[in-house]
Length: 488
Image (cartoon, rainbow, N blue to C red; front, side, top):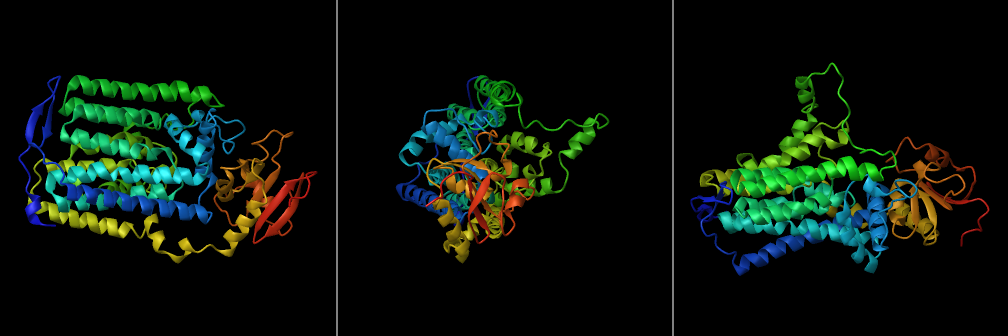
């Protein structure tokens, strides 16, 4: 990185409506055309990387019914102008009783034209890749070309985003660019833009209203108080409405499904607070959030916007929320990198930037080998095994529009052309008088080891009452409801 790019204008205090103050650079220079092309190149490159990774995982049967299959069913419902139902969740299950994500309706028209699970993966790759643009542009304005490249590449390759694109599709893909746009605007002191980009987050997922409130609190602190307070109140009210009214209304049990467990009566507030930071995996997660930024993020108050997400994750009894797996940390990546850019923009000493960038680059380089992006360099990603070919052949024997109970990884392959439930929910997921016509099960699918129905299918001669075996090959069993004609 050229040290001549490390000079920065002295921050200027600005006063917004309502008497708040903020920090802004003096007349930031427009990004030159040459670097605008570089931004598009980096963003476009990551789009291809994300898409190749997720598409190849789906092609090799590594995607799952939970969650790509579920989201395919949701978007398929929207494309048919119906409520967002998912048979994988249960018969006629309205998924607005599970999570509040009406933003997915935006994908309905696209799916109507391209009715495939791959459509969701393409859209997710595009959304996440676009989030690189605001951060890279702002970084260039703050510290020049070298810093802009570092932020763009380090953010795009960050482990949180890699986990998102490497694990199916999720609604938080919409939150990533919205957070990037909102926080870059807030860091620049563009308070109206920060508020307007934050507001749609309440349509992405029910907990993100609290993130909107955190952004509002930051705006009220550093900018126009009235605007910030209004945004904060809106965010809290949206989350309360969604969790207490909308989700319970559509949920079959009449309640929000993800409340944290009640603490024991004898556990005091101090013990409960300590429990939120134990076991140590939670500390590792905190370290992993700021380490890719070379710990620059710790020097900016923008990082506080991450607190609502960390709070609900760490107070949950679900251990999957505590660590770095799955997609849960994707929304924290734009927050961390926006905080890093903001820290540099507020007068961070130039001689300390290079060491921080080196540390961040090393962390990113190491995590490439521990998170999904490195799979693109593995031969198995590009070679379909005999087992995958067998699965594809057996799946092809199931006609479009059929009702099917499938094991988790095979369910994702059918969600865009059949009515799919999960084998391990059968027969609970269908009324006894209406069992699915087909059943297909892969004995190597260990994503649900306690599957009772699956145990019936793991023998050499699989049998399920009411079904006859059509074919068993390479550990994959295809069955059809008794009384139905033989499949071609």
